[in-house]
Length: 107
Image (cartoon, rainbow, N blue to C red; front, side, top):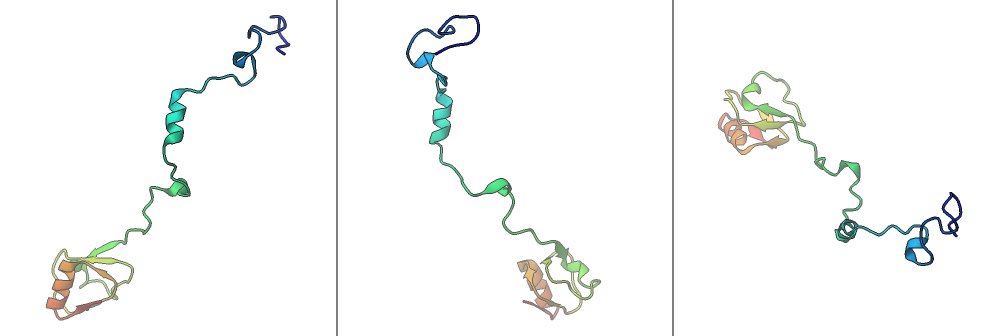
């Protein structure tokens, strides 16, 4: 109807038609492109976090000092080892070779 204000019966919207009615905003073309993009649903706010947390690492040179050898760490091949140790858990290839060479085993 266009009541209100001091602009008369149609309030400056002309007479009938799309431009005269409420909600007459014309949709911008960018919104059409956005709506055509595929949606990635169900990822939530944590979509960039890794699925498995990174394990803390210990170099093989520290295994002579650490007793007992902790589980839940990844053993890397940095340094040298002199005594035989038993390692359970994640072990890199170079660390496995050095442990077995020293007489221990890695599982």
